Image (cartoon, rainbow, N blue to C red; front, side):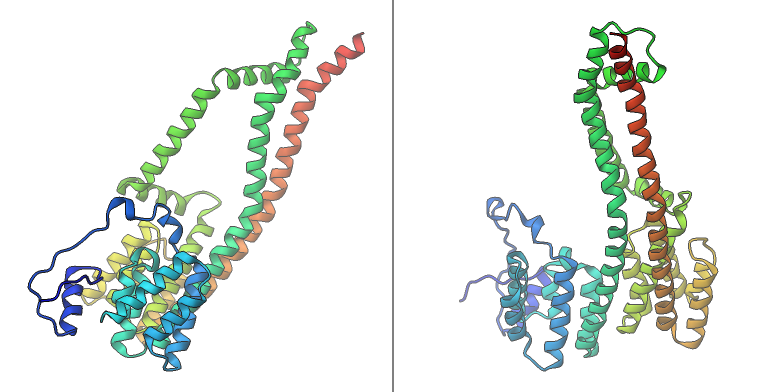
Length: 389
């Protein structure tokens, strides 16, 4: 009788691995690592988009070159710079060496790779086109990362300036202004300008209730996070983002690009349309679009079409609906969705760039206005006192 351990995402997979080794199972019990054996910093183990793209592209190349899976994974593990990701790749190789498929091995790290990634790999294994499927995956990850990077990059400067203004204002109100305003009080200045009186009241309020305001902000932040994590709260927040004045066109373009590109990639990889709609609804990241895609899946399952459902919602403009309708009639849904994704990606990038160009002068104007208020409220009364002597 032989005793041992086998790594698998669930009991069914463990049984399958042992049966492949022609072993008779007498008993099988799940084991868990002790609490203190777990890596405290495991949250840092999540591979970046760049790590995933490089790994996927290299895997596709090695499979296309007929390199054995295990050998290829061990080679890739030796090239990975990040220790945490190297451990993940080595663990995948060990699972495959134990008889698991690539998709099953990836399922052990689903929080890193995601259901979209694993489903595509599983489809590639079933169809025998794993190398091309991994190629589709790498292309998708690259395009998705490029769009997200451009949007974040465009918004970084305005966000940094705004954050700097908030920090400087807080320092001025809590440290600088109390000392300057103390000079006015000691000098017995009277008939102060309205701006100076308002500034004195704000400074006193912030300094007297600073701890209370800080606790209030922390509680508000925690409450907001809890609200958007709840089912109803998340739906309201996602709906607000899609209908926010001046921003709804940008937000909708971003989500439309993601929906169209994800669904197009899944269809091109050979994933059945029902599974494709289910996976797309899970990865879209917006509750409203998730519900629409779920309804589209139910429509297709009942003999209808996606375009029939999309036409009922304003979140899908006529352009997308028409392209999907044509794709369903001609059997080129993936091609039409791919073109729609390109259009909305370009549109969202252009809108972000225009928005950035609009925000920058507004922030500069606000900064100048803040400086002007400080000058008129603090320095002018001080100059008046100096001139009186």
